[in-house]
Image (cartoon, rainbow, N blue to C red):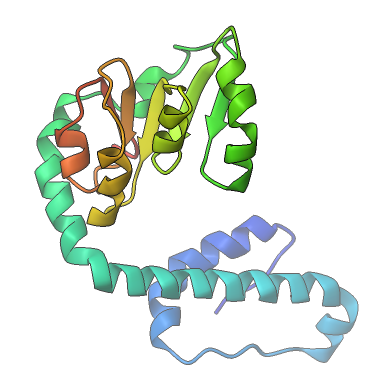
Length: 193
């Protein structure tokens, strides 16, 4: 049973806490006519948010059922690196006051590459793994690359680049194990807890 109140963020937390049970049971929404008349827009938004959370949870269940064994293997094989390297929190304040650019893959990346490559004073550049090869082909070496995909398919982004020992890799312990084990530069752990 979920009871809604004024704080919509509690809906998400309450739903996430109940997701294991909600996914295993038939769900239905009782719509009290008086409440819907008075709070219809809020309740409709809450119902949509609830359904999005359920869809997300169902997608995660499918992902875990397909990739769970690989995630366990990655976590085990990455354990020594996780224990030997600092967590992302250790970077807090290290780049204070320095301009930064966060780069992800997508159609706008190709369009914006010439401007990024032409910057004289290079800002701190943080790239997701999918953007890394695109940046490097344009002559831009990110300072930090972030990766968290546990599938072996993710390694193709790293096979397409020249690894640089001055670029830091921030990785999730569940990431495909061959990525951090072959990294020549500094490592930091995302989600170390």
